Length: 239
Ligand SMILES: Nc1ncnc2c1ncn2[C@@H]1O[C@H](COP(=O)(O)OP(=O)(O)O)[C@@H](O)[C@H]1O
Ligand SMILES: [Mg+2]
Image (cartoon, rainbow, N blue to C red; front, side, top):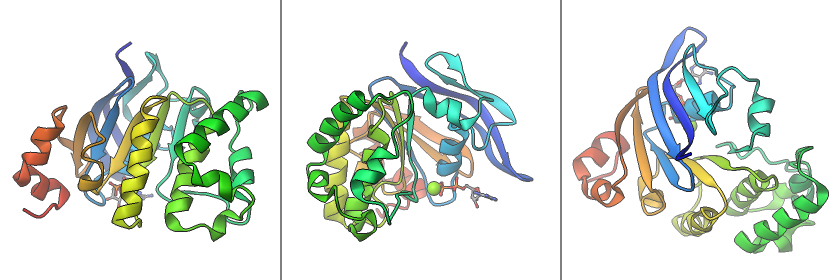
């Protein structure tokens, strides 16, 4: 199996609004696929479509060669899909440790979780020192690390990560992206970003979404980095 995930011509409505107007994309196993686009382009909606929160009216979602299009969200995530929402959704009044513990799914045994915690501490060494601290007291960068760590508690094959660098200083964004690049060894990633510069070196493939349609796609990141006209048009990168 080359592609872990495929979206085939998804048409998605939210209420009466026609939001995704025929999105097709593939996420090859073991790679980082970037979904780039401006604010309001349809990136988060694409993630929520994969997760069954906004099932497509037309089109298919295939995960590990199995159609998951109309499954309920809990069944989809139990197949091994981790989601890091743009809102981070951590529990501020719980400790970091409790935030990790409550993320464990039934299918993940306690001993498996211990192994996953070792991986988390290896990728994000700071987290070990914060375990007993209330998550709400962490800095923005630390909270984002925790949000990613929560998706790693279970052995997910695919991680959907929505705008991880949002609100982070350039240095913190750089550190986070460095940790995500090490994550590649363990999981396939579909990464949503507006901030092209932060993630340009992390991606193996990319899609640019604009007004609910794929405007451009490719797998030559260095060519994209050089294409200033395209970057200016769709990603607001100044020339
Ligand atoms: N719950 C909703 N109700 C109506 N429109 C929505 C809703 N959620 C998103 N939209 C619209 O769908 C479009 C895509 O939104 P979104 O997927 O969040 O964009 P992005 O993540 O790329 O910034 C936007 O025009 C947004 O206003
Ligand atoms: Mg979004």
